Image 1: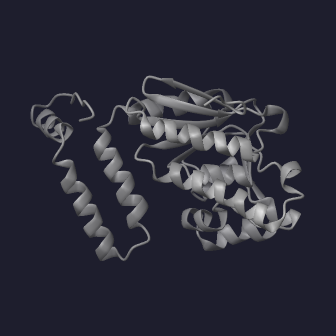
Image 2: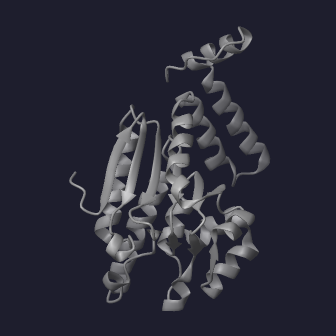
Length: 260
């Protein structure tokens, strides 16, 4: 697929998707979301890709939100199709068996926050800002914000942001658990890629099982979730990486994982 609104590259087993509409602060229109979906599918299907990083072009925005100029005249059925495209894409990214890391390098508002929420790990620059301002234009989040945000930061904090249309800076996002780490702007992408390469070097099947257990166990009853965890752990014993990892531990050496 030809990409007009994103940049897609792969290096050392790490794919990078860069939202590339800097004049629009990387706002998401339907074309950009379709390109994101195609790129996520490409990452999922390429065995050489072990991790994915998302970031924004320019120094002002990760994704400033959905493109209001495209949305303002949508009829309800058209709006629903746009919401479904976004939800399907973000769910595919959230559940893909590879780690996904957001490098939030500026404004991540509305849909930008929702994209970050669907990532496994969120790093932010000191000048990043997060928020769900949809209510200020007469709508509500439509790409999972009302569901993922309370699961990550708690019901009260999520309602505070969603109902008021407020925004928070990177430090506050870190304090409430919305982001994992905050870096100076010039260190954000290098540090994110460094961490992504570390994850890319992990035993791939174990990473897949760990992500699956967390994603699909967290909303189950504890007994069922622990059973899921046990089954996922047991499946790891079918891999060469499990044999190598335990052998290396006993021999007091660094393991040489092969992804098999």
